[in-house]
Image (cartoon, rainbow, N blue to C red):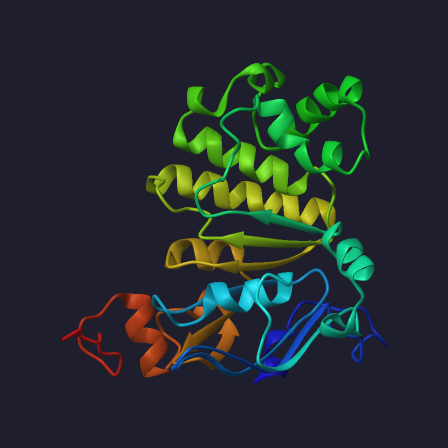
Length: 271
């Protein structure tokens, strides 16, 4: 399964390259509910993986385990061949400096102007002065198609699409080499969703970053993913090219991708 996740083009002689992210036997339960039940995945450097699955399938928990927000019960997580779970606090913080995150609803700070939102991480870590942060924010905003003057606005003055662009700008401002995208097109109309997806692809390629996204939007998954992996009942049940979604030959994946009511996936009813 995991070999299928490494389909990004490689130069000759690099076939044995260490994956950027490697998960092995990842398990996590919350009380009696087993959310992750042995997740294995490899994501090659510079590759874009989209994780699919229904609500409660473990997509967000998987990302939270990689980020260190949730401690898995079993399994291993490696980044660049290093065991994340064995890292010291300082090492984990250094790893965090290399990671960008686009949250589902943007998660912008309402009390801060856009330019401060964009440079929030850089300012908090004293990697940039406030005097230079405005120019830096304008530079990054331009990369997501926004004028520098937007930096002086508050998040409340922005449309949903503009807020998503600002959130993307914040995710890439520190030039991370790993970026996580949590439902990047949620709440957007189809056209704006396509615009955001295009910006994501452009930004990831510009940085040469490795991307991991979770989404329910099949059009988005096909646009931003090199490879897709589907989680079902805590396990990855299929991996393959994102462009094949909807006609994979796997009944679980095709039902989910095509939004079909009938199929092997049945909604659990609460009694």
